[in-house]
Image (cartoon, rainbow, N blue to C red; front, side, top):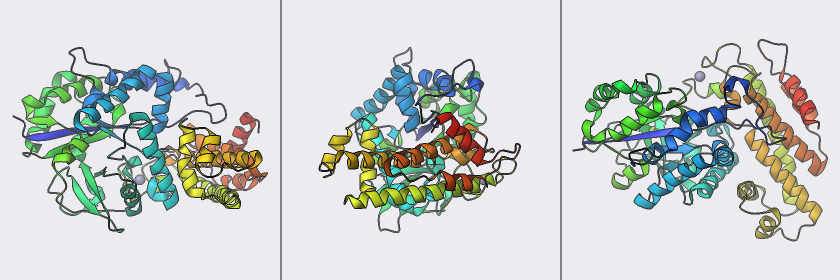
Length: 466
Ligand SMILES: [Zn+2]
């Protein structure tokens, strides 16, 4: 008989690595024998975890809780369609069977939300919810926070948008953690509340960093699960989904085993939404603002640099300042244009995701927003500026600042998206923001080369032939 519940949450995510000018993924030789990293991780992880098991007991995707990053979902849809369809079907199957799905939404560009202004938090969350509904056909109950980065304003935005719960780590909260993985209630400054589940860090790390061999999974479960089980209680493992098959080749087999061994080891599998249906939170806790699961130095990893990455990481602050200054200019131009035609810039931007998702076309979109009267020139100008806002949002993907070096593909990707946003703004209004951006990027220096962010910008401009 089951005495406790186990949920394994997998955070499936790959940053976009497409060239914003061509829409193509450049070859990535370090992903050999595959053409690029998405292909390789798909073959090692996403596809085998989505494949039906030979015994007819479904797929791993049906039995875990998961979030699927927007950039990855789009790539899978286009390049590994069968796997994508299976993942979507696994989530929808849960929804149909239990009136609650096993998928969580995600802010669409994986932005570190506490570092973003409120209106950008709202935009990322609304775009994430719209993307989830577009793929899975129903509203999400939960939302994964990029890097679990949290502050109260972010949680308020989630609650305002109808999100019921998120996942944090034990060190990100204060108060009575007697309910283990929860759920807990977090009262919010705006008078609302949100539910938080806490990942079991020890159990999650035992799997993420010390993956057993398939032959030893029974021993591993005996060692780690039995004593943790409290009658009716929840054990939550939350980790990168790529742990299962990509970080560890044997991970798919181990995950399958853990998902099937509950009866023998006294636990029942569940998903967060399902568990919450029967066990609403009874304990209130507080969060510790400006914390994340992948940096114990506040949010320094994504702002000024910290010991999480080796070497001189001052480039992070310089790049962030350059992006922030550029974002301020882009926003100013966009707001001025929106106000000139009496449109609300931020709600219009929030809704613009429908065009990016292919749900509507520009003429229909403008008609629905009482802008059908615009001249074709004004409509085109507004469309360019909205598109610029999309690329401006993409500049802030968390991976831009995650690693040690400025001279990696992730910061280059951020600068390339900046170039795209500047180009679209230039088409629309004639404003050239390149000079100021280059000046700011000069301060961001690569540690091991003479290059600065300005050199990277010039290389991208040359490639883009803008
Ligand atoms: Zn850190």
